[in-house]
Image (cartoon, rainbow, N blue to C red; front, side, top):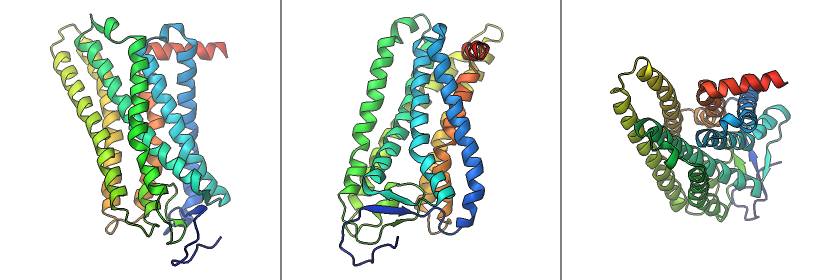
Amino acid sequence: MAAPSNDSTAPVSEFLLICFPNFQSWQHWLSLPLSLLLLLAMGANAILLITIRLEAALHEPMYYLLSLLSLLDIVLCLTVIPKVLAIFWFDLRSISFSACFLQMFVMNSFLTMESCTFMVMAYDRYVAICHPLRYPSIITDQFVVSAAIFVIARNALFSLPVPVLSARLKYCAGNIIKNCICTNLSVSKLSCDDITFNRLYQFVAGWTLLGSDLILIVVSYSFILKVVLRIKAEGAAAKALSTCGSHFILILFFSTVLLVLVITNLARKKIPPDVPILLNILHHLIPPALNPIVYGVRTKEIKQGIQNLLRRL
């Protein structure tokens, strides 16, 4: 399908996604590792969810938060990666106008929901280590329900204006998106309207949400580190540091990838455009693949639950 001319005023009904405009020959080679990462992410998160659901010993607030994180990871993977693989394998580049902005909304809201869930989980570990006697009275099932409502409502509410503002723009500069997914920057640049407010809102909202989460996460783990270093019981400090350290590293990886993605987008003139596209795709795959392994398999109770699940099969 040919793109409309630049002076066309006909409303856009669909977009064409052009992955890696400079290196389209990479696509078939890249599809294999992406497929394997997708299978790993979906399989690991599905096993974790099933294990928590079937094991009565795991029906506790901490594991409910892990379930929420796994559900967010699954939705993120399914929102982005199947369409990318369809482009690579079957050249299905078209995406409808409404589907494009729905994908944009899910990506923006669920990424910030994941960041917010990390923050709640950091608070959970803070209470468990710094105030262990008060943990059962603070981190309750009601707390998890309230936290889940807060995570969903806050991030959906602040992310909704991004696709709404973008969808209200007038598109007259063609319908070819030089990206594998419908990011706000890639789509809005096709508009002939002023997109300054659109970009400013996404920048301010994104950094307000992600920045506040990261600050609270760092503060929580700082208090945890302070308490852990005071523990005198043999092996207790090392165990706590090992568990919380792996969690904190994973959170930093999530935040660092986002920071690198922002920097590469801002420096497009100096960095090949295919680099941020690849980073964007990987950011929807690598954290979902690592989260259930780091948070789940390294937890003794979940490892035991997975072993019990395998014995039943």
